[in-house]
Image 1: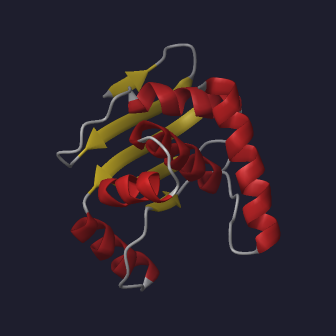
Image 2: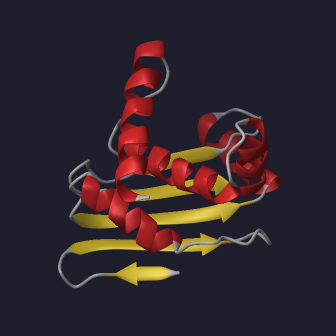
Length: 144
């Protein structure tokens, strides 16, 4: 699931470390999101993991011993990210059921959400959540 385009210096890789089938090209979808947000260089790695691995990452880096659906890290800049996005596949499935969404759409939403976090969008306050949700919906509507 790797995608590299010679037109620019953005590298996106995707790895599915679960048994959950992914019905679309994750790297290509993320590339479309990145282009929509004018990310032209850097690298983003997207890894789909299980509950156990997500809890380990959440505890190690954020000092929380709970499950979450996505964790992102950016060691670069917003203009040239060196980002890691971890998506918990089991939580994506639970979210899809809870929000009456398809699993494919839920994974796409989480990818957009993760890329927005890499661009320093936050979702701690009601205002931040609203801004992020508006932008997620705009991007999803445009590229899906």
